[in-house]
Image (cartoon, rainbow, N blue to C red; front, side, top):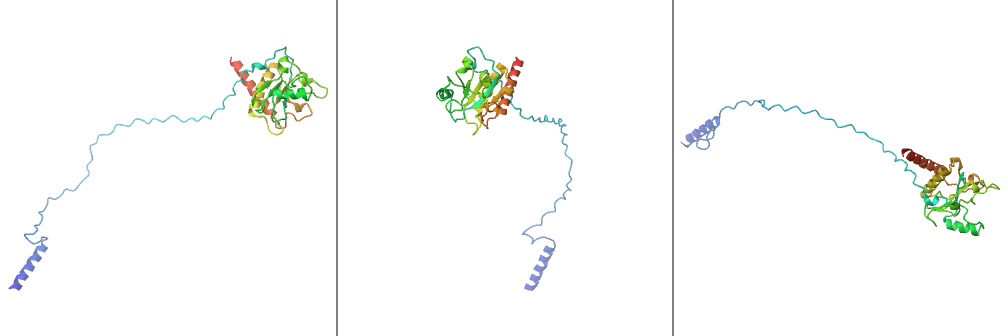
Length: 244
C-alpha cells in the first residue's frame, strides 16, 4: 500500500515538472502574457534649426617692430655759457683730461696759479666726474666770460690752439677708464653749442694729443662717440627749427 502511494506521488511530481510548474498550491504558473511588439526607431518630428549666421573672421594680427625713440632735441644751453665780453673768433674745440681721479675748476685754478705760475685757470670749461665736482657738471672757467685766450694747448711756438681754441678739461684719467656717461652727455651738449655758435667744423673738434706731443685726453677717450653724439644733437636741433 505504501509502495503504491509513493509511486503515485513520484509520477505526479514528474508530470508537474514536465509541465514547467511547481507543485499545486505552492506556486501557480504565471499566466501567459501578451506578445510584445518588435521595437522600431521612429524619426522625431524636430523642427529644423535656423541656419547659423556666417562666422565673422577676426581681423588679421599685425605685428609692428618697436620703434627706437627719436633723439630728444638739444636742450637750451646754459645761460652761464654766454660770454660777457666781445667774442673771439674761436675755430677750435680742444678736449683734455686732467689725468687725475678727482678735481674741479677751483682745484685746477689753484694748481695753475701755484705750480705753473699762470695768472688763472688755463681751461675755459671743466666737466666734473663726481670727485670734487658733480658728475657731468659743466664749470665755467674765469677766462670764458672775459673771452680771454686759453693756456692749455701750446704746440712749440704755435699759439693757434690757445688763441683760437676753446679748452675743455674733463676730470679723470682716461688712460685707465673712459669718461662717465654724464660727462660725455654734457661734453656733447657743450661741443654742439660751441660748434653751432662759432661754426666750428667736425675736423676742428680735436683731442689735445692730435696736435701736441701727449696722450691727452687719454687712450680710452671715445672721440668717435663724441662726434656721433654731436651729430645727433645737431640733427634734432635742426629738425626742431625746421618744424617751427
